[in-house]
Every structure is written in structure tokens, then in C-alpha cells.
Image (cartoon, rainbow over all chains, first blue to last red; front, side):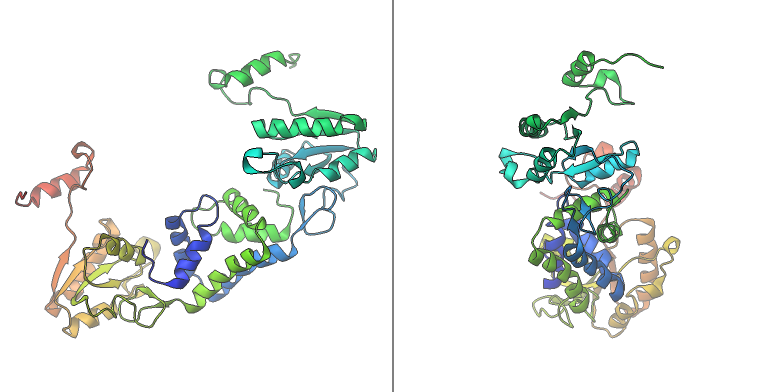
Length: 201
Length: 201
């Protein structure tokens, strides 16, 4: 692309550094920004600085927070002895939006992925082990994505947590609600037969 | 979405105000930004301010430029008597990338679209008429998209420019190179038969 301005080129460059945004899309977005008022662009620019400066990570669970301890860890109405281990904060939001979970979370900030050079030491794992060793937890639910890397991470965590006297559970795997049986993959289908549950009305 | 931080929510809000970026995508982009260093985020934030503060519109042709007169209008090697009228700067880039046009441009900054409340007075049209009236132009090529709005704008410009003694031409319409005849729409196909050209090798 032959962009006729250095400033425009810089803006396109920065926006297209975001995942899934190509140069053409970035140009379209920047042209949209150009149509806005000075104040609006200033506001647009400012939120990213504010975000980086003020956003904290909850020192207890690794969730994103505006305060030292996040509002979930701080909520006395929640079960403080139940922890759900997830990959990132989007998983927290997904589980929170179900409205059925009342325990705490532990956000790893990623999963073990040797292919991407991410090992256990790059993740927020040690504080979870310390929480478990301090005896304040009764159950840890491993809620990582059912992929190779997720299973590897589950296995690593299981090994580390096995001697802490904590019940370790995992999300049930099976046929998704609303999906058609004939399109389910073989692994999922065979798992759902093995782990069949009593039929209830 | 239940976003646990005001700063995060603001950033998601701003990014999702861009066209074709939803809340979920915006969240993914913001989480990517969060993984970057302070300097990188500062740089990201700064380009949009710079853009708004420094980017100019060429006072002659309406093209985007870092200088008062853009590098195309300023280029003495280009044909100063030939002007191609386009909707926005992406069209300039598209035509420039063909490398076959050596005249100047005139960027309207949009097209007449009563449905969106955009009339002739909202566009960069008057300077084009003045350029034509001053007698410095020999030919004006109308290169707007072949849509209802594009045709309306073409018609409006034709009416305004008809008495200026300038040749007015339009992009040829027909079957796109590389496309299959059977999939061409009827209007395009019938137009390409009416406006058939002598066969050359």
C-alpha cells in the first residue's frame, strides 16, 4: 500500500500490529478516526494509556482489577474454599456470565505451551500452589480448554497439587447442548458415552 | 459482557466504536495491548494524537497529506490538466498502485447520499468547480463507485461541470478481468455488449 502520509502510515502500522487486523482494515479504522473531533480522538488515545497505567492484576487470583484485590476475591458472599483455575480473564467473564458459580478464580495468564516457549514459570502458578498448601482451599476445579496444551497444563497442576489435600476436579466433557450428535467429533462422543450420567427429568 | 475493570471497559468501549469491531474482538485486542511494555502502549496511544494534530488535507485536491499541498499536486512530472475525481483517499491509493495514471486527483471525501444525510455541500466539490472554471483543466475523469449514490454524484458533477469547457469522462464499465461471464450480473453484461470495443491482439 502506498500511503501518502507518515502520520497515517504510523497509525496504520500500530493498529495493524493488533491480532487479526490487516493493513487494509487498519486504514479503514484510521480513516474513521480521522472523521472524529479532536476531543474524541484524544479520548480514544487516552484510554490505552490509562489502561496500562491503572489496570492492576489481583495479587491473590491474577484476575484483572482496578484494586489490589479484585471484587470477586473481596466478596464475602462467595465460597472462599472453592477455586476455579482458568487460562485468562475472558474465561472468568464467560463463567461469571453463567451466574451459576459462586467460588473464587485463579487466572493463570496462559497455558503451558512448549511450542510457543511458555513454561510453568511464565504463568501465575506458584501462588495457586501456595494457596492450596496453606489449607484454605477445599476444591480446585481445573477449567482449561480441552486442547493438547490445556491437558498438559492440567496434568502439571494435578502433579503439583496432588499432595495438598485438596479435591481436584475438572469440567465435564461431552456433547454440547444444542449441538447435533452426528457432527460431534469421535473423541467427545466416546468420552460422553464413557462418562454417561443417570437420566433425570 | 461483565468486564471487571472500568479502565478495561473504557478501552473496549473505544475500540469497539470503530467500524466492524465488536465488543468481543475489542476485548481480545485490548488484552493483546496489555501484554506489551509501557513504551509500546505509549507509542500506540501517541500515533492517533499525532495523526489528528499533524495530518492535513491537501488544499488543492483534498487528498491526505503531511504538507499544505500534497506530493501528487506538487509533482511537476504529472499531467496538471487531467483530474480524476474519487470518493476517498483509498481510491487514490488503489489507482496509484496501478502505476498507469499520471494526472492529478480530486478527493470528494464521500458521495452524495440523501439516505445518510450527505448532500453536495458536505463534500469537497466547490474547489473542483473552481479549478474547472479557471480553465486549467482539460479533462475530468469521474471515477466513483458504480452504485446508486455514485451515479447520483456523477450526475450532479456533470451538471455543474458541463459548461466549463472541460472534457468529462467516466471509468469504463464491463466484465472484470479474470471473472467468469456466467456470474456477471445482467446490467454489467448488457453494458459490456453495448459498449463493446474493437478486438485487438
